Length: 419
Image (cartoon, helix red, strand yellow):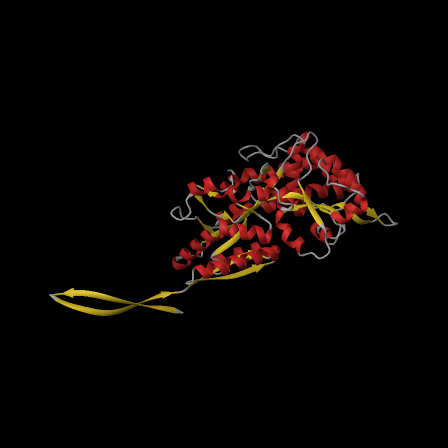
């Protein structure tokens, strides 16, 4: 489809003036945006695209989304073939994979100034910088919190969510139910390293027991020690000693909580939208329980948007303009209202209204003392945590031996990357 632009060119030649009619064609531009399927995120992005197109009538944004399990494979196959997204959503921990595979390109400093980003966004976003250029930017950031089922709390006579890890155990015991054969019918707290627990263990529990998961330069694994062992022992004891949980209960932790079969559930702020749509579920949110000496810690993560190497010419220009909008204050507020994830700028996120909000508040407060893991390969590093717990459960390996195996394997990942 073309818009015809009429222009009058006045030319003077050899003392004579000629009026020539000329026309140029300015094509409408269509770009494509991809993200994984999560209903609240899809709803939010549809709204952002609607707003963007209304303000930029020459640009159309086509969207596509895929199940999480298939998403990375689809992206990796499409872009090298010159197909798929011009702007793509990716987890911050995948950045190295996307850069090394040449799937994305740097954001231009003329439009997205690194100095501006450094000043206006949360410091964690600086992990998206390579050689002084930003490769991607988030619309929102997120932290962890403790979701609790208010109806189950009321039934058990529990007046408030646990403030410490010791209280977490005691509250979980009161919320746990079993049938006559001893099988769990309701868990006090959900667990599962494939969900958010690998973050809870790495950046929260390890620190609360006096450790630090990695060296400051992120080149050395630091959890193969007493602090790491205590943190892992606490985690596996929830199932093995206290019998208040089972990682396989109802397959997925969030499914058990949504079904009203779990008293507590640790998850990210992105879960808010889905829980709001769960009929009959009465729930609340609290900050993560503090450690043995009162230490608070949290984990913060984010999904970012990047311009792919497929985007060229007019599509590249349109993609940059779209990127600027979806990382604007307006977009961040829409994302917060729809998805529950916090604005990526402190000026927008750390307001009194947000800090005191019944639902957002615990996440906002947790964000102020959160840590972001600088993943080399998020999926590989996550799988090591899954395997670490599985060896204890299925092979009866000791906590010390299993954590040593995980640390050795993860150190190799870091060493290979830093060669």
